[in-house]
Length: 262
Image (tube, rainbow, N blue to C red):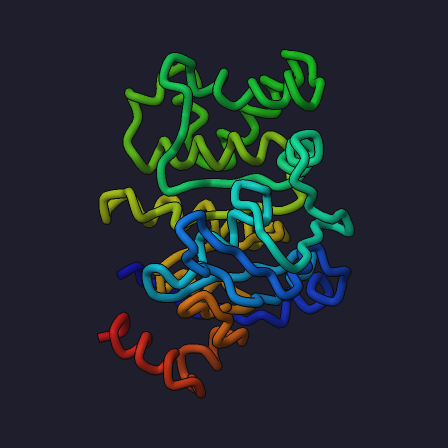
């Protein structure tokens, strides 16, 4: 387990008093086989906030986060990103994804493109940046995630942790308002987990709005402003890390923590 120390959240007070950037109200989602995966889930995430989603397998946490950028349609309820309703038409989804970056379990890099080209592709084609400007931005981001020296390599020449850091830089290159992380360390060898979590921690400290699905308890304790706990498609708890880990009130949460902390 990663050895993080809990942080004080007082430094984020000014940030957390700003406007809501993600508003989900009574979100319902069914799969085609009739499985009811989200059951009236509601939450508000403020600009600059770091929110971690936790829960047992099949609880709906990954599905919930994927509704935020249109990867998963929802059947009932309402989701707004920065005041704009998520619509299910193609044009609306494409515009939304320019504002909401996402990092997945798998890296999803183009294997035939260099690291640099993987990062500059989106900004030049979707944001209209010139190639020199996109390259300059990409190099700054690669330096930020600690792998500027790998810019001209191909993904297959990198470790899993390095590839995931490229994926984070690629998402940041689109200058998103929100960053979503769907279990970004679950496909990594244990020794590579820390380097990715360090990048995420740095993003959190910079004020980036982040929603993270993760089972990394140390990371959640240190970085999260709030932890949302989902079970069986319902929101069971939405509270601070201190309350979540040290004073869990819901029986379902108590059972979950007994399993992951021992």
